[in-house]
Image (cartoon, helix red, strand yellow):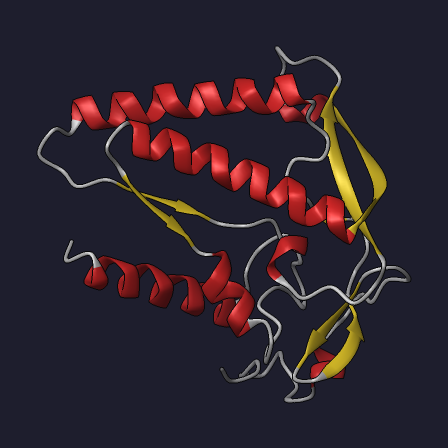
Length: 190
């Protein structure tokens, strides 16, 4: 994969990171680089009950979608959290937890909390969430696509988030995600 292009980006990986943190570090293009702390996590802020509730809501939404569009082929794409998209070299990761003050209200009334987790916890949580969504998808007869492999492969050679907005993919990240979806759809002849 190529690095960032255009007037906003330098060709150097080191200059792509606009807000390097103190804790999070990753390997990109065989170099260890610092990335921002307090990145999106794979739902560390949720309890097991909260994750199960989210899974149940997802199942109901997917069931509704399937029943409403009976002639459509539905593919569920699992997109990992920002921090789960890279090979982490730091022993711990810094993530942001967004905790609503009142679950009945919108997220405007939420508070943000920085949390520290180990790499083992990160991988375990990412797998837990992905596996729940996969199980739900398959139980409804839907195709499940886990984009983590392709995104992680791309992140070995280029940064796929930032440098301005670390909560979303950059141009390269969206390109890799689109290519991953296309490849899987073609393999499954959908």
